[in-house]
Image (cartoon, rainbow, N blue to C red; front, side, top):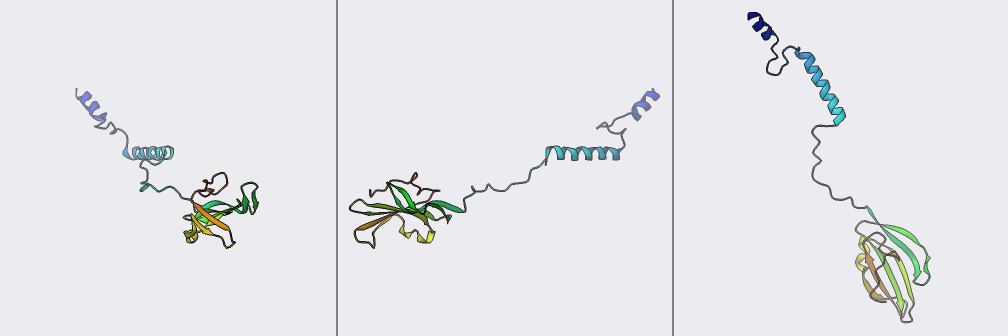
Length: 152
């Protein structure tokens, strides 16, 4: 019985069952397993990303540019794209007279120039009126995207 007690005592695995394995190789194996897991599965605790970020706003607003356009013929001079800093606008000017002439000018309008947005005034040329309309979305002043004017 003493033999059995001695044998059982010498083979005791202890509470974790690790008493028969020397500790330094066990720690080395455990460290290698942890390193391999972190390489395979990435970080176990992700970094705190912080508060949610607002959506990325474009640095510039892109607008349609045409220096001389008619409804019948389209853009006759200067068809292009202009860029204006965010917070600015696209603009279309309708130049009309009582005989039905309708000329359009489309361009970018900086924030400092937006006082003339959505404005009606008489032209320096006698008998003509200018209707201006600003908008604030990408290419909103393009002929395909324009909102019809109140003053037709």
